[in-house]
Length: 257
Image (cartoon, rainbow, N blue to C red; front, side, top):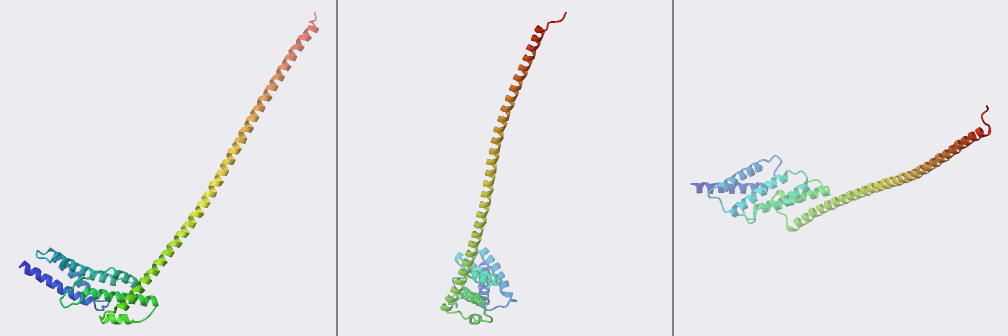
């Protein structure tokens, strides 16, 4: 009973997966919500398949997971606002490698991937060229008719050229920013260098003034010492002269009796 239930679950999963791939290949309006709900149901069924006792082989489960992830990524890419962002997101999508049902000559997810890339590149080309209205590429994609290889290659070249231009502009902006940063750094270094030179000159001048002040202080000290010595000798001479004068005065003029 478990094997039959598991087989029935896998059959239902394959049917729903095929239905989702068919809906993804069609043009959908913004109000279309069924595909997103169906993909959510696919995720739940895939989890149940992994937990099943009679689950498919690991290779088959990997292929199922790859297709479900592709559909999820496709829905997320469609929610982006810019055609450039959509094109970039679609570049990283990985479609399935094997057909889901027997009558598919090419895996449906690969066809959807090609159609989506062509549609995104067409929208981006219209945005770049400023065209208005529906291009031939959009009309063919709406009918579900894949583009030929030459046109797809030309549109892919346009996308790559656009991104190359964006990268060049970004590199130029970064170069200008680096150049401005370098100029500002050099200007700051020059200002700091000038300030250091001014400070060094001020310190040298202060040292010179200190040396001059020290020299003048020593000279003043020596001059003061010399003045004190001369004054001392003068006082000694004066006292000695006075003493001798008194003795002579006493000798010459004896005391009157």
